[in-house]
Length: 276
Image 1 (tube, rainbow, N blue to C red):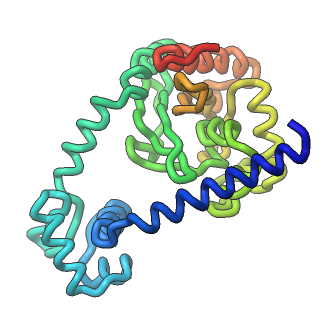
Image 2 (spheres, rainbow, N blue to C red; image 1 turned 180 degrees about the horizontal axis):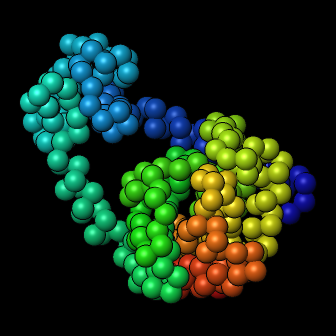
C-alpha cells in the first residue's frame, strides 16, 4: 500500500471509530451506566459508605440510593451487618463461575497450562487484553511459585509485563502510543521500561522472536516469558506466560523455555481454530 492509500485507510478507520462512538453515546441508558459505575467502584475499593460511594461516582445520594436498592435486591450489592457499608454481592461469584466455565479461551488453555506447570514447576498465567491493561483470566501455581499479588480477575500494566508486551506487539504503533499516553509508563523496578521509544523498540524484537520477556520489570527478582494466543481470524485472543524467580530462568535457558511457552500458545491457538 502506497502513502496515499495508508492515509485514506487511516481516515476511514477514524471515521468508523467516530461513528461507533456516536452510536454508543446515542443509545446509552444513563441509569444502567450509573449502576455500572457503582459496581466498578465497589470492585476497586471493597466496601464504602453511601457518602463515600456518592462522592466517588459523582451522583446525588437520593438517586444513588435507588440504584443501590435495585442492585441489592438482585444480589449484585450487599451490605455489611457490622458497619453498614456497601460491598459487592454474591451474585458476581455466580456470574464469574459461569463465565469461567464457558470461556472457550480458558477451557482450551488449561491442558497446556498444566503441561508447563508439570514441566517447570513455576506459575503459569493466562491473560486477556481489556481496556488497555492485562487481565488475569486463569493462574495455575506450581511448586516453585513466588508470592505474587496477581490473582484471577486482577489487572496489570501493559508496559511492564510479558503478557502486556505480547498484546502490545500485536497492535498498530499509533494505538500503542495512545495507550501509553493514557495509562502512563509507571516505574515499578529499576528495570521497568519508562521510555516510549525504547518500548516500541522492544515490541519490534518481540514480533521477530514471537515471545516477550518481563525481566524483573514489575517485580524485582522475578522473570516472566509470554507468547500470544491467536483465534481463528488470526487475531490475538490472549497470552500465556510462565513466571518465576530469576535463578529459575537463567540467560542460557531463556530461549529454550520460550520455545516451550510458544509451543503451548500455538497448541491453544490451534484449538481456537487458528491456522498458519
